[in-house]
Length: 126
Image (cartoon, rainbow, N blue to C red; front, side, top):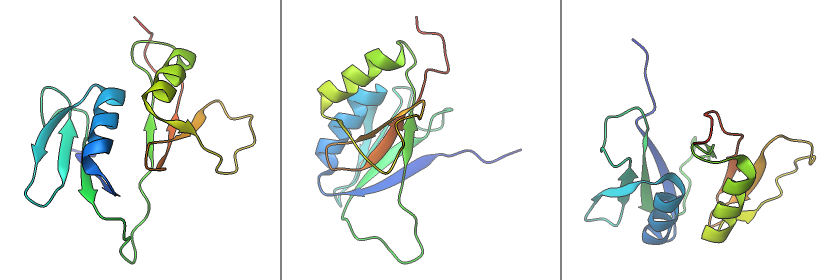
């Protein structure tokens, strides 16, 4: 048996704002807000399925020895161009992290500036 990614944790200034953004991007729902301001979002069927959940935690300090989180997304029901337009309309913006322009993906940033990549669809759009 192998391990799977169960949660991705992202420190952020405004967990509620990012929860709304990522819920729209991924068609997730809020699963579990906690008493300390963190919000867990995930698939409608809940924790434990094939997709990891995201935990959006207040705070921006990076602990020593940790690496920044990077998320890749790919559309499941439309082509990459249509998904790019949808993400930009939701508040994502293009980000320059030194790419050449020849990459087959788009580098974007969420509303707080966290970079993520939009990859080509891995499933045939419906």
